[in-house]
Length: 300
Image 1 (cartoon, rainbow, N blue to C red):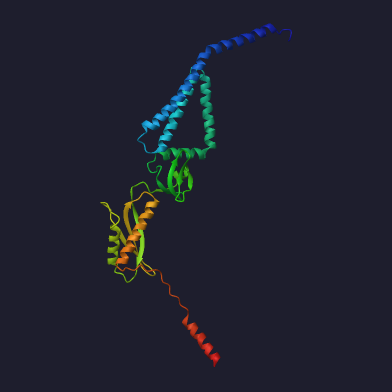
Image 2: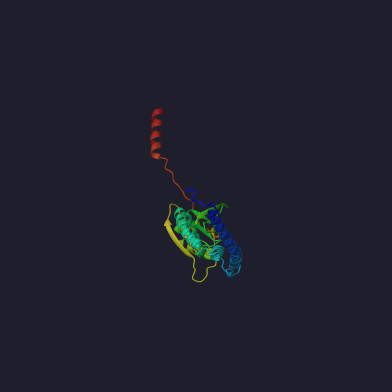
């Protein structure tokens, strides 16, 4: 076996193979540098095009999250085009096919492993294009209330009234209802109160409505609504509802406070009583009487 082995022929074959590789490398060198140059050009083009889209094409879009999502997506798409163009320049068609096949398998595995994260990502993409929630809005959702300060592909961040930040996953916001106080410029405010049983209810309604109308202007198709609601233990309860400009919890509390001040001032000027609860205690007079009789019998 070893006698038939020709070392010179084997060495020549190796040298021929190396020479072929060397010639191939020399021939492919221009394409290699061209491929690198192409990828770099696409990389910088992606950055500039992304910035151009965010700052100019989407200049009139008020939602910052929309600008961010579109900018990042355009950058990734342009970079991927540059990557595949570089592979094509190097005549790596088989490698390109393998990369695409491997990307599909890896993408499937990653998708199964990161279902929750991908859910948040797609939810964030949806939230970015929803007009119902924007940065700066005051919302209530998932037991939290505050001002929206950030919307990204993972979560929504709100600042509560105590100045603490709450990060809510996008999937939670998509799957749960939320209330947006900033969706409209005007809202209806409700104030509850009660007056004594001796009061003239028609007069109370007139005075209360006039007090609210004096500080809160109602627009066309808006009106102040007054309803008596119950016969309470010590008063007759009512609610009054009116419209005003509010876009958050602070404005709502301020409107309710001003309404209460106006109602109390009007009641003071017209001697209308707002009674406080009264409780009558029964100390058991019969029991005291029997005990008194017993004491008298003992003294005799």
